[in-house]
Amino acid sequence: MPDARCEDELAITRTIQLVARAYDHKRHRELLPQVFEDHARQHYYLLGQFVEFSMPGGIEVAMSFHERCYATQHLVSPPAIEFDGELARTTSTVHAVHVQILRDGSRANWILGGYYHDVLARHAEGWRIRERTAIATYEEGCFHQDAQIFPALADYTKPL
Image 1 (cartoon, helix red, strand yellow):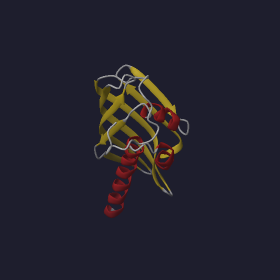
Image 2 (cartoon, helix red, strand yellow; image 1 turned 45 degrees about the vertical axis):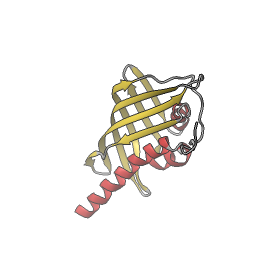
Image 3 (cartoon, helix red, strand yellow; image 1 turned 135 degrees about the horizontal axis):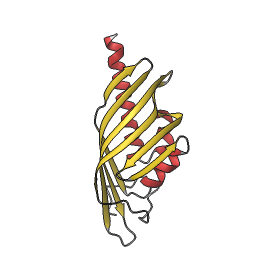
Image 4 (cartoon, rainbow, N blue to C red; image 1 turned 60 degrees about the horizontal axis):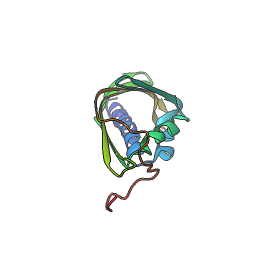
């Protein structure tokens, strides 16, 4: 049993980390269907703003934010996990940096700190997120809706 529990914890951690990879590498359509249940719900509390969406349409919602970023970096801690049969409840600390290029060419950073509270369910193909509640407890800067669009991952080895 301890080996199975360890394998579950690693698989859950990987699932949560794949969401960050999808966001940061602009691989939303490829990776998010692998880690979220088909009708998973997401609730984002962003210091006075509330954004709620469900899959599969949630992929477009997430992309609409991340495409307005030249780069993002979601640093997600290993989760604290509580098991409840075939479900797991997790809490992970997150620090997310969003770098935007404004229309005048200047750079703006929107930095968020907070927590992801996830409910995951075991499936034949592995653990998948059923529900995510994201709570921001810290914000620096602001998100600019009119920033330049970057639909694909930038080549960071070249000047902007």
